[in-house]
Length: 357
Image (cartoon, rainbow, N blue to C red; front, top):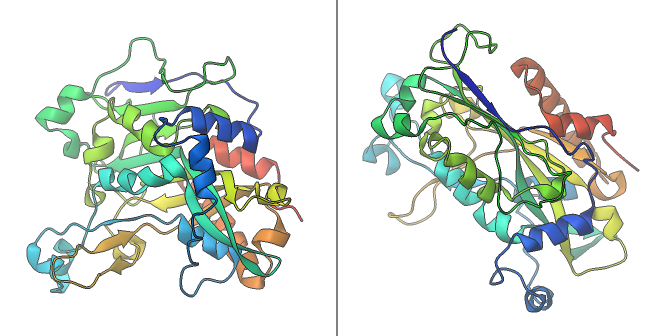
């Protein structure tokens, strides 16, 4: 044994079927009154619909664009952040990166109010479906040396009872907890399926097992997990290997305006995003806003996706959306196979069939 692997949580909640009304009630209970009230519901009816992103036509394309986070780009040198570019080794050193805390910040408003996706129904715009993100799975790989700072080492401890408890979660008996694993001071044991590369070790892993209505929104969950593993906020994308990724579950909570076709919009999605910027090929587009003092942003594109209760008539009414759905589903399957990762939500989604007419 080289060290100790910590795995927290117990598996419950096999009833993973999604109930939109129940999920919405659970989300409302988890919000402070200032964020949600009957008056807020009425006010939301008057909120103008967000425009569809430029160049995006199909509903699935609109969803993917709406749930793609964008985070502030950081640079090793100020010269690179001002638009200077070098080549060769120096260019690699000037490659932009992001800090994980900024990723979670990008999800904070969506976690509180939902991400608005402008959809076209019956050939007409004006319908906005809102989705709340939940942490479904995450794996962080890298060199354990990045964690060996006085602060991070001091906080890397094991839990004696092996169970986590979230005070904001529903207390019903069918609500379990996810499984958490992180690197202790001694490291993982040799039987954890690690690669032989000492610079590419599993630093952190969380897999969600709860049914949807028992979960905390993403930023709340990350906040509780980071208390056990501070690196979840402090690590940089340039410190993570290309095997690092996150999967986000998106569940619908409400629609503006309401209407008789709510059932057609109860699809749920899993999106997959890479968390490493070591290779430029795996980094999203860098956006340079106008203005000398503006900070460039890095997008974290959706590279894989799975769905549940997916209605072809709503989400893939054109060939482009159908090809996008098929390609993203295959990419998710390939990634999990190559990563040898067990993803409970993904297994549930695909076991129920990918698409409905």
